Image (cartoon, rainbow, N blue to C red; front, side, top):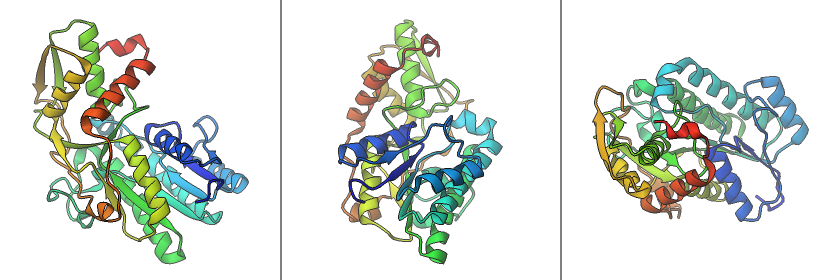
Length: 316
């Protein structure tokens, strides 16, 4: 990519998309474009086709997606499947029709079988049943990475796919109904702290594991691959170490400065027990994460304090 290349970041206002924009800007790229949902509904095929025909982006980062935590995925599996399929198909097909030079598709580690051997290598894809609590989202992401591979094989398109582990960081979604693990736990501990509550309840047994990667590290990996990789195989992007939910809760508790008790609720779902991805292929290409989990949590909580002012967030 040249510094003045026209680069479209689909989903530029979300946590992942905004991290990509920050990274591109920091590296001196000057022609980055994006559209809000109000400006462009990516589910509407005709609107997406018109946008690509008019703007003619040279490079595309496909970070747009309908996302949510366990509760949201359980409640709305059809929406998570259909909305994401439509977004992906519209952008990938429009990119090809308008001669986009290169496209990077962002998937998720939830694409892997729920009982995959740990750490999970890329060849574990479709070797077993998916985790039921986010099956709709996972199926859509599998379809997206397969579409990129098929466009490469059939048409020679330079489309690549990456599968990050659980992401967290600046501009995360702290909504009470749709947040993922880190924003959900940060919100709970912060609320308990300011409301002087003596305990915080976390979903599940606390024994499930999660691998967490600071979103700006993920963006750095994506740009590295856009500049250095054009292989047919998708690549995992991970931190290289996972932690139990209870360990994560203890780390967040320390960062927030909460002094009460942590209580688990085994009646609540906790999703896939473990999904540590094997990032050795990516590491062998010369990339490794830079931000420790401790530093990443501090940066995320500081962002939360500076940007989340809604009084409703004080309610657990």
